[in-house]
Image 1: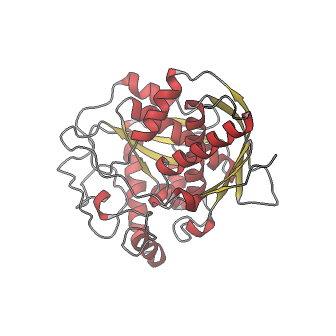
Image 2: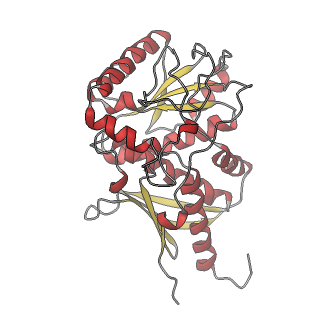
Image 3: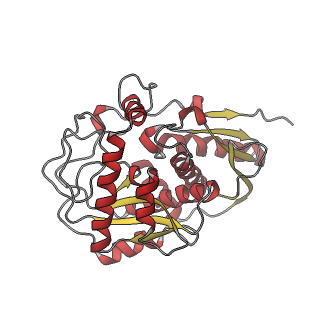
Length: 333
């Protein structure tokens, strides 16, 4: 940076770059990208964009909040890779419910190898809906991924018996979704050519047929063009993101934890697939809750594994232009 550039100008430039990197790379349910950033001098605000909420599949907004939590953590990862650390105020203004978080109180810090590795993982992370390979994850890798979740939101690795329970819940979620005309129409919209350009899931990232796996994934209603081979996820590891509260702020934190887990997994060459439909349905979400302590709540199910080495990397999902998702408040002296 130019030595004549003021601290505030340097920070504002870093905030614009962080918001840009976050919207370019963060995951969201069905690639809806339900967020908006506002960059102030020395302050970054994250808003929910309810116009891109899944009203049929996510009426209470838990998946929207998880998505926004992921983009929030991605922004902090980008800032750390630029040598900035910040304080997060979640849900800072109850009179503006769309304002989900504010990043403030920035300090200059040393750029660590960990920060650089996370930023690299952020840029290379992708969602792979194909079955994973027959090579199981090592216990050390599973422990490292689980430990990255944190304290308030944690990752519970399922036992073999619990995987069967997850399978039953996921199958029920698939059956119930197939009977919901509004949810089917919404899913069709976000996986078709009628979706807004730069968002949704194109055919190239959807399986060309439904794999016969122990735990069924989301049924998209029509085949994509992504070849998935003959795998069955027999060596996959399954886990639940969970915590002891079930409200919007904790869903946001769960999204942050999802981001951290996913980036840690990516750095360890572990494929991550969120299983969101099984937590969207109250009945199947309650089935997942029985795998936890009585006062805990599941936020998301995850499939972990090693990607098929011969399959290559699937295409990346399209993204909305950053200019549509980031507002910049002019800096004045």
